Image 1 (cartoon, helix red, strand yellow):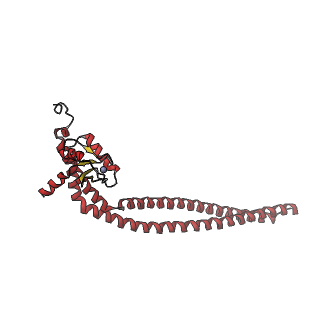
Image 2 (cartoon, rainbow, N blue to C red):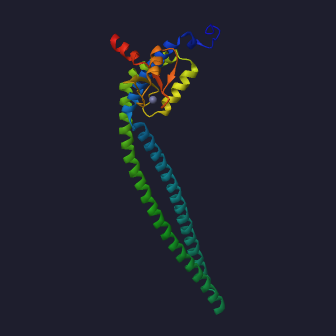
Image 3 (cartoon, rainbow, N blue to C red):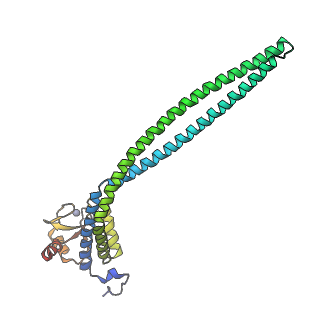
Amino acid sequence: MATSSRKSGEANDYSVEEKIIALYELQKIDSKIDEINKIKGELPLEVQDLEDEMAGLETRIANISTEIDTLNANVKQRKEKIEQAKVLIAKYEQQQDNVRNNREFDSLSKEVEFQKLEIELCEKQIKEFSAESKVKKKLIEEAQALESDRQIDLAAKKQELDSIDQETAKEMEQLTAQSEAAASKIDARLLAAYRRIRANVRNGLAVVTVKRDACGGCYNRIPPQRQLDIRMNKKIIVCEYCGRILVSNLLDESEQAEA
Ligand SMILES: [Zn+2]
């Protein structure tokens, strides 16, 4: 008496039994999709990891390059300083030829000495910067070698994944369409419950049949009265142990008989 007054979508046009059948259908289709995804195994994750590692190496190379640029700029600056010191030394030595007394001569000698020390310091720094730059260049080479290794790995794994995707694309498309068709017969709340259970169980089975008087998901015994209720297909019954939706094994047998 109340069913026609509740209209909240197409899914309500279906009886409980039809919904249960659709739910079991949906589970079988989704399990097939799971199987296909299983073929891919760790590949999608491995591809992601390699891509992350490559990006990390790129950043590392860019950072070291910037450091080398700074070192090169420092070397250039010290070289200019050496040239300036040489010019000053030449100037002071020339001035020493025209001094009026020893005091002026000594003072210029001190200036020359100071500039010579400056040159020494700059030369020492240039050596240090160049050595540091050499080490960093080596680090870049190592990172680049690692990068090209990873590039080869990545290309191989991507190709493998692509070929699986291509081989299974048609089947996946059909299964996705079938999954959507089955889902359209199930109301939103039940569908949400199905998805929630599926996400929480290891094998992705949210809908299981009763097998040898036990839940097909957790293998706990189902009392005879409950089994009878399940066979009636009049309401949604969940396993009291694992929370999976239980359906009659007759649904399975009838399908096998059809095939
Ligand atoms: Zn169970």
